[in-house]
Structures are given as structure tokens and as C-alpha cells.
Length: 328
Image 1: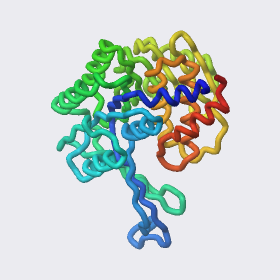
Image 2 (image 1 turned 45 degrees about the vertical axis):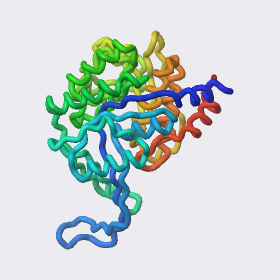
Image 3 (image 1 turned 135 degrees about the vertical axis):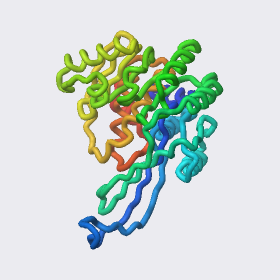
């Protein structure tokens, strides 16, 4: 058995608590054959609708696809989209015990209208208001019940309000006391609130916005300075920075490693970050070294970019390529 085959097998025993903003990704496919007489816009004749789990729930799909067990903890509205979200979780065999429903916010839905293989428009239904104190307390109650069974925690932050400073501090403190690693996929609002986490994984845009500095991904010294800064400000054990076509950089357990992106035909980058954080979290749970974390995460993020739309990684394809492309 190869090193990567062994890792693939070991993924199957991992329980992952995913705290973050869940949403529905809707796709509306149609055809355009005329322009509206009311305004200079195309008329879409709808042929098909598709609803998929998105946001933190897509991280759950990736974790599940890798053979591990995801448990989501998130807010959803008491509305039709919320009912659809719970139904989609049932369809995927994913636990709903961490979902808190509330009448104070809508369930986030991002609808993409597609015609002639082109996205014509995207329609978002959402609230970005931070969770209320009552919602925070309900979430923390669910987290307290779910945390003892988990091996790693993912914060999947889309700035839609589920994650607040109170929740971050409570979870990180309890996780540290229980020796459970915490990995983070951040956004702008809470960027510097994730103090003392195990692995912090921004992309280049998020790092620029979070630190309010310009970073040249082609200049390794510029990247290292920015990573050193955010690592020190957060007191994080490690930072993994995704750089799109420029690859991935990791600073973890005394090692700084930069690897290039694999050359691929890119169809759609949507959801690549969800795949990267899922793989990195499972590797952290297994206490793998930096070189394995960054190599496998980089590979998985590239693989999903070959597919149109938000799709979870294919485990068999991932580990087959790992055997072929990454030295043991």
C-alpha cells in the first residue's frame, strides 16, 4: 500500500465539525430567443432548475466525498429555502443536528441563470447581519453537544452572519482545552478574530483585504512577509495561502513550502477553496506534515476547477493523481 492509499483509508475514520454559513446554490438553465419589449434585456425560457448545497454545506460534501463524516453547525431561515436545505441534507445523508433554524433571517440562496453556456445573471437572497445573542447561544449549545465527537473543526466563513467573535472565541478556547485542531477559511469581517487557531487558510484577495496590504504572488519575499505578519497577529500555528495560478504557500510546524499549481484546463474556480480547506482539515486531523498537507490540498483544488459549477472532489481521482504526481 502506498503512502497516499494509506492516507485515503485513514480519512474514513475522521469526524469533522463544520461551523459556518450554509447556503443553496441554484442553477436555472434556459434558452434565449428574443429580447424583452419592456427593456433591452434577454428573455430566458427556463428549461431546468437545479438546487445544490453550497457554502459551508459544500465543504460538508467535500468532507463526505473524501470518506470522512461531516456535521454542520449553522443558521438557516424558517422559510421555503430552509426547508429545501434540510431536504438536500437528508438526500445527501448528512446530519441536521447542528442546524439552527431562525425566523430572523432568510436562508441564503444564490441563483445563477445560465443560457447558451453563459451565466446571464446571479440573484442573491441573503442577510449579512451578524447572529443575534439568542442565535449565538443556540449555536453554542449545539456546538457543545457536537464537539466531543469531532476530530477537527472547520470555520467556513462567508460573512453571512453565522460566525461572530463570541462564537470564535468560545469554540477556539474549548477546542484548545480538548486538544481538537481548528482550521479556518476566512472572510473579511472576522479576519483578525481567529486568534490561536491551528491552520488559517486565506486566499490572496482575502489576505490583501484582511491586512490592507498589496502582495505580489510572483515575489516570494512579499508572500513570506505577509504570511509572517498574519501568523504573528493571529498567534496561529500555521498559515496556508492559496495563490490561484501561482500555487500554494504553507508555513506550518517550522516549515515554509511553496508549490506551483498543476497545469490544467480550468473550467470554473467556484468551490475550489471549499475543497482545499476540506483536504487540509483532514490532513491536520491525521497530524500529517506540512509537505503532505500542501501537496494534497493543492492537487484537490486544481481537480475541481476542471468541472463547471460547484462540485465536490472525486476521492478516487485525487489519490490516483497523488500517487502519480506527488513523491511519497
